[in-house]
Length: 194
Image (tube, rainbow, N blue to C red; front, side, top):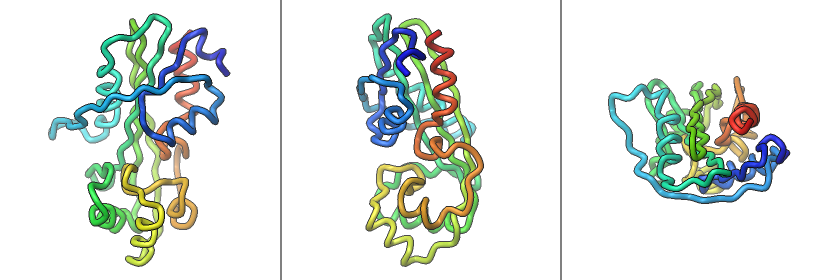
């Protein structure tokens, strides 16, 4: 589906293997990968629903030089439960604490996405609601020790054991929960490159 890029070169500015996999499965290829680490802090008074979009934009703005024929795509995913953001866990205990909180509750997964060209920047987001069934302490520790979700917001991956065995329902985009809302990305990227 190179045609939706209208001759542009797509650069995925993310180290996430899941975002790479989603782009590959979408047929939007070829694309290059370039990653820059940024400070992912944000103001305490920022609306929590805007954090993912803010960080996606910050990741895109970290690139000083963008060629005329390039489009960069960046993204950031957060898990939001009872007004609190759950990002990537800092360690095993933090992951246990997060999953203990999410167990038996509905939460929201928000992914912010930014497209940036040499002349334009466009940011949008998508939200999905997820309900995780009650989990025992043994199940939580089994999951963390087996799947090692230390690089995942909310300490879980929808595509692995927890998503298969413990998710009761999802409202919204499945790929959004993985890290990139591909239906929206596909549509918005086509419009951005037109």
